[in-house]
Amino acid sequence: MTTVEGRRAWGVLTVLCLGQSLVLLNSTVVNVAVPDLAADLGASLDGVLWVVNSYVVVVTGLLLVTARLGDLVGPKRMYLAGVALFTAASVLCGLAGSPGQLVAARVAQGVGAAMLSPQSLSMISRLFPPERRGAAFGLWGSFAGISVAIAPTFGGLLVSWLDWRWVFLVNVPIGVCVLVTAAVVVPAVRVDGRRRLDLAGTVLVTAALFLISFALIEGEPRGWGSVWGPVTVPVLLGVGVLALVGFALVQRGRQARDPLVPFAVVRDRDFVLMSAVSAAIACGVGGTLFLVLLHLQIAAGMSALAAGLVVAAAPAVSALASPLAGRLTDRLDGRVVLAAGLACTALGAGYLAAVLSPGARWPVLLPPLLVFGFGMGVVFSPAAVIAMRAVPPELAGAASGLFNLARMSGTAVGGAAVGALLQARLGRPDADLDAIPPDALGDAVRVVFTLPVLVLVAGIALTAAARSRPAEGVGPDLGAVPARAGGTATR
Image (cartoon, rainbow, N blue to C red; front, side, top):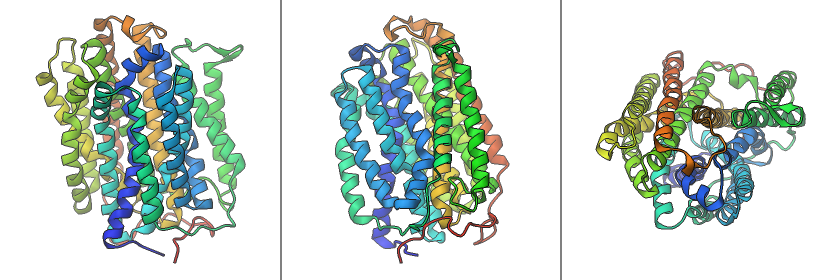
């Protein structure tokens, strides 16, 4: 199996991390542009939530399928195709002239993101030797944490200095750079051409994830009633759950015939627990950043630039904490590092909820943002390291897809839940943001903050249930691996 060494290893790892950072950045960077794009395109609160969440819904619905396709056609090919589509869709987002056009472009952007996202972890697992894999995952986690953390400040600068459209157009030069560099420096990975795509499983899991996400996002605006005639939100939710059950049954019968989800992966307790923790992190961090930026711009009347600069304290601390977290995870019990990071993140979110008010000045917000940012910088690395440390390279594609699915599901469900609670609290889902009284929005935001705090606290409990560390040099038994469970790197 080919591995990468020396400077080439750093080049490969950097370009893979940059592509993943584009995916994560665009899941949250649009939040800071919400007031401007809503005013420019005439979008209601419900329409704005679809601009924010449609991207996440599509990525969530396709991750398992695109991870599997990476095993069939090669992860490098899928990565390059995903970057190309993502970049082209970003152009369409920047040129959108209506909320409908922007949502459609965000859907295309989500398809590209789903194509490239699971390939990064998969290729890291296959191209880096076991003794260097932890450090590689640590850097991947650092990029992920910084991308999520820096999005508000980065977006605020773009919106204030240029226009909300540049939140999307800035992806174009970065995407082209990643595409060209990846084509040159990332080695190809051999795949087994005899493997086949599970069509029944593909249809079921895609339908299930889309229906569940759609129902959660549209539930409150539609009063949990009709969507199209007799089809109601609870019906869609129920059909989505049934499709998910059907998918599990199909996968159970296909374990010897190229399943989308090899049960050998989900039998690893640490992988399952860390996937759940990853979902909790995405839900808690994403929900907190969305609520803080919405409050600062609408309730406190700050500009996008001012709000971004206030929130910049969090990514600044995160950038310092991320490398430290990666090194500590290799030397200490990863559970301790992760639990400490989750505790700081939850404490910072709760502290923010306590001090947010229309008249709050930046010195009051700085301490909780510093605590929150430190926690953000710590949590991403150990979660990925613990999840993937015992996964064999031949199962890396499936495991990467599942891990990314968990994270994006947390983002989708968290965004939907925060939006639904906010709309329920305000009682005006179709109102323009400018028409909502600042005091009413501020009160609603403080109440909804309870959700991300509780989710982050739940992540601490899940972390405590993980193993302290695997046996030296040997991962836990994942069970029998099917003969054609994954590809091997080019020899």
